[in-house]
Length: 367
Image (cartoon, rainbow, N blue to C red; front, side, top):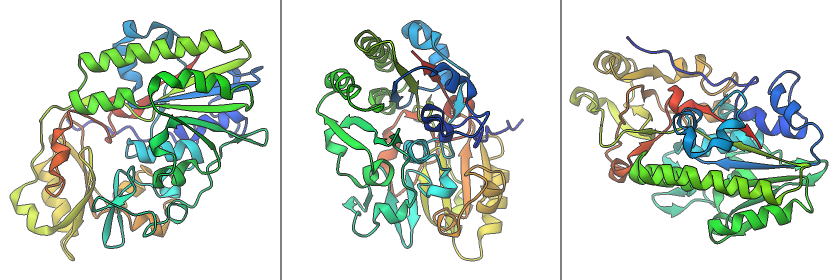
């Protein structure tokens, strides 16, 4: 039996509402428990733990008892449940259909833009695809009129994706994770909103799956947040969220039927939310063939069907719609769909991007 996809709760309890609840800008009723939990705090530290989903935190609660104990009701990630789309929704408070960072690899004219590295064919694309034009929504990264301080890896400070989703913030670059606590504590002396990005959990999951290395990084996150709690004054709140969850797919690949390949011009997206760009005139036949062949493993939708489901928000601009493919394959089993032009993707064990609970539910924690 085909499960129901977990559609993002835009406007109610998704990543789009987190910063609004922290700064007091969110619509009435949305994330009310987070707003209430932060009442009286003079400033807030938002820790973004890349790749730690609510279901994983529940399963491994013994590794992070303080984080587990500080949970509010989980929120949803966005669609696709992937870092580029999710972080941009977090900082702009806009849906992917509005801000346009619609996935890890997305169509831009005749090219495919890799959004995290902001590259096309492995070459820098910041001139060809200006981040401020590709993503025109100004990030809402101020509180009480003061720009937020963002603590993250120094190597990303000037990157295209940083320009797309963090412009307006003060970027405080660190060279190693051990510096994060000191930099965050120092920043709270001057600004009312500090955002700290921690990517170790996601990195080890991609490389090695949800094994010993993953468990160790959850425990390290727990220790880091507790260090922050000890060093910060009581009137500084700590909020911990994630951009998406994670599953361990190992080497389990879903094969596209050979009969479908001549109908496909090229692919974009990622292994857990794969877009197929059809040969002209073949969209309907491609969708029908795949829906039957992959019924036991994947949701298969045309672009119009995916938009109508509300996956990318209530509004999808014409420019953003053109970045999507014609048919998407979204696995609901623990497997991935490979793009033959990106064979290195096959090396990843831990993955995300789909609409399963394990990938879509993210924790909302107050410490």
